[in-house]
Length: 323
Image (cartoon, rainbow, N blue to C red):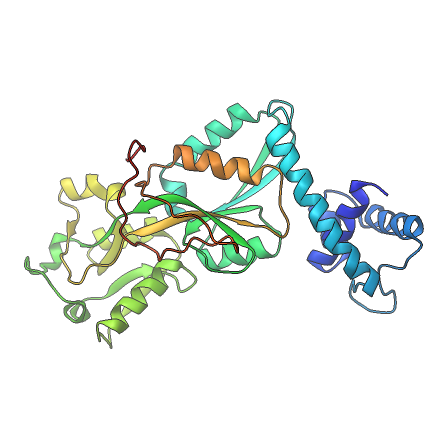
């Protein structure tokens, strides 16, 4: 019985099929099937119910998966902490939302390439809910997205906070005085699609303010939303730092709205149930290169969750790098 045997068992169980496990492990279905047969012979136990259409574990198979998960987690920790990064090879799959991709992601890729020259990076840019589905399904090893993500089995590592604001083209001639959420009903609202964290945050904010009946146009691209806003198609909720040049040039203006929404915290989310040796190392590099504002990070709970709401105000750590 070897680590590869346990790895094959784990991924067949986790992904639900021999084909999916073979793709995840860059192998063939026949090779994965052979590993499972070898494992069954080594233990003298049937691990899968061959009468079922799907890859369904027997009671002994279910028991063994728990051991396999613990072995994989330990192996991941050994490789990440003890191994020489210059000789580590493999593939790490990272999912990010668009604002991370538009800001400091190139610095992360550059640092990753320098530190792990033999590691291949597969990047997936998507919206929050889609990335979470991929993380839970094992399609990606790490997700960097708005959070914290309060779900069992997920670990959150804070990447900092980003300040957003309502913005509009001067051509809309929006009043200079402070507006209320209900006042925004007079113009179309431009925001990310419903599968984004930002959409859910704005919906809660409008509902809590009693603002209803507004027109909302959505898009899955932050860059496209910015271009719509600059073109005067409506009011957008955009990151301040990234669009400072457009504000200074007069293409956009900040619309003061009260109450203000909290700043958006970004996190690196990892699934503890299928650890990847490099995922934690990538998350740590992301913390180092992130240009989002750093604030005091409270300790994680036993479930791996950060017990702080998105955007809650906290004092900076003394001596920490704050950008």
